[in-house]
Structures are given as C-alpha cells and as structure tokens.
Length: 114
Length: 112
Image (tube, rainbow over the protein chains, first blue to last red):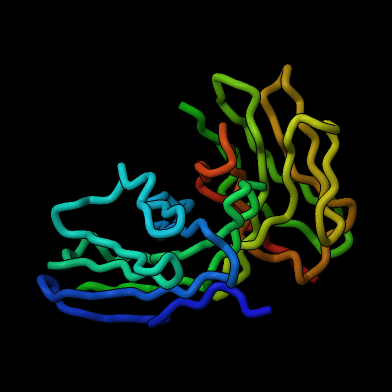
C-alpha cells in the first residue's frame, strides 16, 4: 500500500516568490492534514480537511497561505508571497475519518526562503 | 487547552541499556495520548497510543508507555536500546482524535 506522497521534497525560493506543495493521501483516507514543523519544534496544525471541506483552518495564516482539496483526494498548499520566516518543513498527513488518532505522515516538503 | 511537555530535548544511551523519554501532559478532560517517532528523512510514525483502556500501553519495536493520571505523565520506555532506535520522539495529546497537539520532541542518541 502506498503511503502519503508529498512533492516537492525540497524547495528553495527567494522571498516574495510564490510556492506550492502537493499531497496525495493514502487511498480511502477522508481526513487530510497540513502541518508546519519548524526546526527543533513539533508539528503544528495548519489545516484539516474532511473530504473537500476545511473543518479546522484556525491556524492557517490566511493573508498569504491558502489550501485546497478538490474532489476530496489530493491537496495543495500555497504560500504567496513567501517570507523568510516561512522556511520550515510542511507535512501532510491523512487518516481514516473514523478517528483512531493514527495519522499517516508523508516525508515532508522542506522550504528554504532566501 | 491541552498541551504536552517533553522534559528532555536530548537523551543519550548506550546500545543495550534502557531508554526513558519523559512526557507530562495538561488536559481539562480525559486525554488520549500518543507517542510518534520520526527517523531522519522519514515521515512520522505512530509508536503507541493510550485511550483510557489499560494504563500500560505496548507499542511497536519493544516500546511501551505508562499513563499515570496522578502524575499527569506518559513516559516512554524500552528495556534495551538498539542503534535503529536513534530518532526524534514526539509526545502527543488529543481531546478528540482529530486534533493532535505535539510536544517539542526528544532526540534519542544511541551509541555503540
């Protein structure tokens, strides 16, 4: 069974440029999460989807961040424009909607903003 | 709001010796607690979870954790460390399975 797939694994951009990250969750997982992980910190939730609906986006900085999950499968997280402080690892995870507490994480997308 | 505190940012052990990674939690309700592991350049993986059943929880790779309500602790242990255990470990609390709050992590170093 394929795991959660994220791309790109690494991205280096100049500040004020846009960037997008893509996530393909495990087949059959209705819940999808985007987490932000700063160096030396634990992951922090940015947004959670139940199918196509964003049910928790309270931590998403909506002035520059946006996300979508069309058709309730793949998801894209966008930053426009990127700032120096956005340098971090962006993690995607998925889980069964029944909610066992077990999240399956991708390997992450490491963003460096110069 | 729920939170967890991981008391050590780094723990160093020798191969074959016991491992203890400490975690204290804060929660208004009966929490669900988890330990996740993150190996270098790998995705986070669930080690074990406590959901108000048995207070001693066994996980993968020989790890276990004990829920102690009186001490608000959920420490992770393993009797004998292996080189492959070297990784970052995260204690996690949830008051509903959908929203997990991660600790800051403990890096486990295992020397030969």
